[in-house]
Length: 124
Image 1 (cartoon, one colour):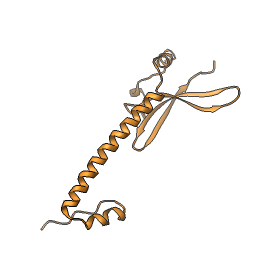
Image 2 (cartoon, rainbow, N blue to C red):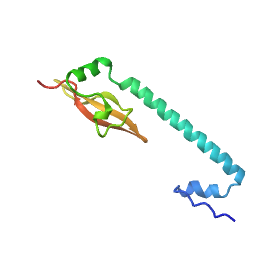
Image 3 (spheres, rainbow, N blue to C red):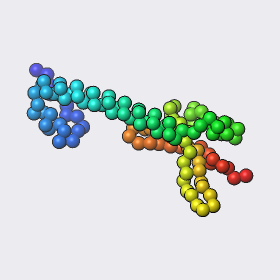
Image 4 (cartoon, rainbow, N blue to C red):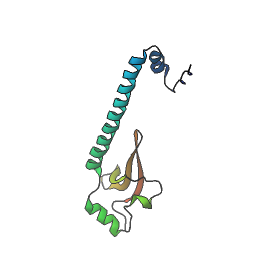
């Protein structure tokens, strides 16, 4: 006789009801869980693409950064993964000035990460 599988690190409200199910029902739940996980991955990817399309800087901004000798290659930044994109964030607005900065931005798990690059309008 084989050993009972170890209980996964799940809340009791999830694993206890599963233990009461038939093998057939458990297979149905497993198939659904797998399909749901794949769907959620696709949704996350679609969200990333939509957000990127809305926020990513254009070619003109990339050229301006290049002219300022600021790299737009993720490999030149130790903490920035491939697939990150450059966006502009406004950190503060006053009557006289907007404080806008270039940032790398990427998805990490369920959260968004970013890393500072440079000000949009450097002071002379």
